[in-house]
Length: 170
Image 1 (cartoon, rainbow, N blue to C red):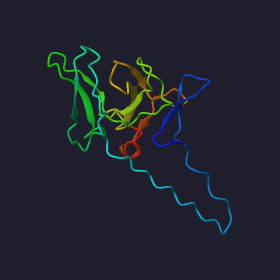
Image 2 (spheres, rainbow, N blue to C red):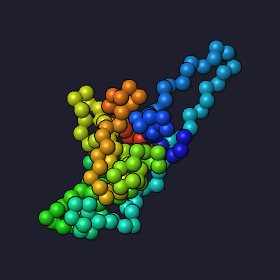
Image 3 (cartoon, rainbow, N blue to C red):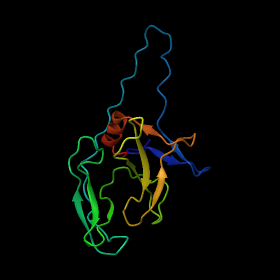
Image 4 (cartoon, rainbow, N blue to C red):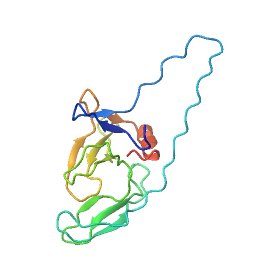
């Protein structure tokens, strides 16, 4: 499994398939069994803005790069983002890093693989949901919530989201 890969599209189905696996089965009943050492979670490099902020998809004005404010309760805090420089438009045009982007994600209207982003707000059960959006911020594509094989929206605890952020998956 490649770094940063969370979901992929099956070649036989257009549905997103989760790559999150079930916990390993119980160890074999032998006295000399040693549990494998878990692999360390890779730490992605700090999020860096793309060198080209691009143009606003709504009004074609140049985007400016900003950084979201520090908020310990927001999984998207301190991320670089694109925002239209035209004050009359003021459109948010996506994050300006590569977190949550993977070549196997479904393409957006631009034809580029989409980005998986964690929602800032929690649902009524205190969990966060993920959604697909344009990776480059050059179109208004919102491809919907990330769903599991059962077609239900996947929900994640704060600890699960934090682990995915550290791995660069969301």
